[in-house]
Length: 104
Image (cartoon, rainbow, N blue to C red; front, side):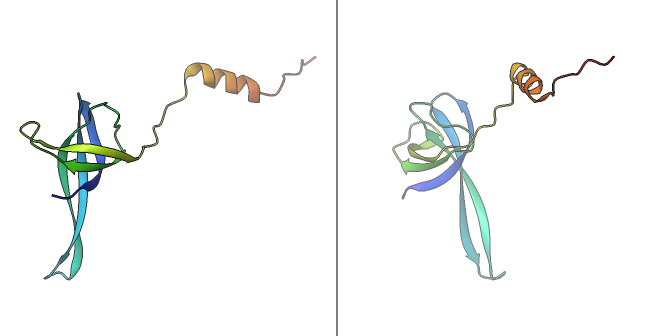
């Protein structure tokens, strides 16, 4: 088997990730390219992968019943959204609020 590139779709296990690998092939009857997705379980020794990371998988000996791949490298890290906390919202609203003028 040759190395494959895919996107991490689950990392809820310890030292394991699920990677979705897309492939295109030409359908002879439809005369179109068709996309198929395969999901592989892979070994992630340092637990570095997050959901959305683009990773390269290398084949290995069977590590468990469904795990035959090892994460060779992380090609691109996913951008992780962190919602603003209540403190930072309060600080930014007090900064942007114009000074109040006393009304007489």
